[in-house]
Image 1 (cartoon, rainbow, N blue to C red):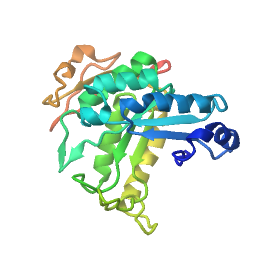
Image 2 (cartoon, rainbow, N blue to C red):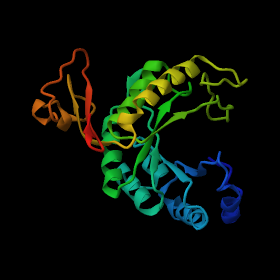
Image 3 (cartoon, rainbow, N blue to C red):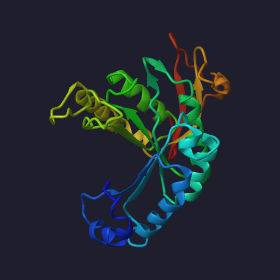
Image 4 (cartoon, one colour):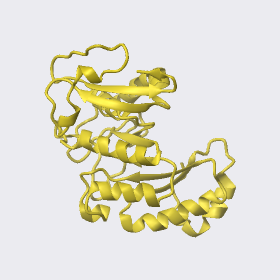
Length: 264
């Protein structure tokens, strides 16, 4: 993805003409975490690119629901996300949500995924999600278990793209300092690289289930928390030949996926 567009907003047609045919070119990074007040400008940039290039991606990444109303430029997340999918003109939507803070789970993680899925489905847009892969702020050092938890939760809700924040350890910017990421500040692979490689290898083998799938319904076994009372396990809602699911510990997130003519 071409990310350095900030100084070339008046030259997007030429950029698209120059780069659209390169085999290594994926598309255009338009903005990360915009407020509503920027949506009109982003839609204009998207339209300018689409006049020249209708094949490659135009990418916008949205805030999570724990962003402030001031940052989003909207009264709540539902309003923010709805305006984004209605106004930006993109053909898929990305959002970031990093659920594990100080070793605990943010309580809105699953409700936020439910909101993103519902609103994306209402407009027929696929959505992409993130996993936290760099130590910073109150986020802990990434582990293989954390990456899998975040990624498989998103896939259970039908995510069609998985991203990592970040691949290379960022340079401290005066606001944040960063610790371990898959690649350290000197270009060396770290333990997180191995975690991500393991997860990606597993995802590649399972892609036939997730890529192109639609999440029909979700349920939680065990103690239902995280504001998801309506999604409590009910054996009567299980699909097809599945008669029951049981678990110990904190329970399971069960997703019924439909992919073409197959149900999983």
